[in-house]
Length: 89
Image 1 (cartoon, helix red, strand yellow):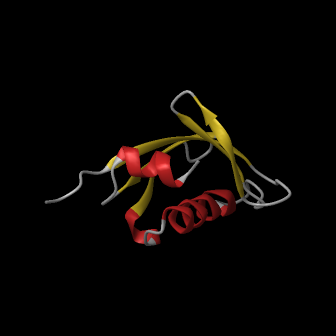
Image 2 (cartoon, rainbow, N blue to C red):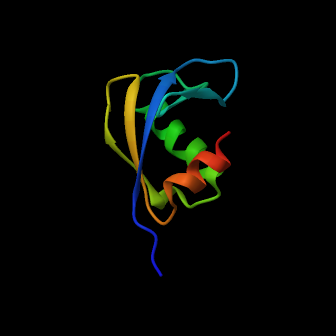
């Protein structure tokens, strides 16, 4: 059995005091990242943070939209939507 790709909507606050999940707003995960939004640093940090938080490889997490926005969408391979919600409470 294979698990389909899942899309995760994010609202990212860069330059936070620490990398952390601050909660869910409807179907959007709110996250703070310490990295500044300069030259893709925050995007790289968010991919690594979400991969670590979900227990998946960074290669399974891909930024699909929102490269220059606080509103982002990540595609996560090999994990269901319900597993994502359970792991990112």
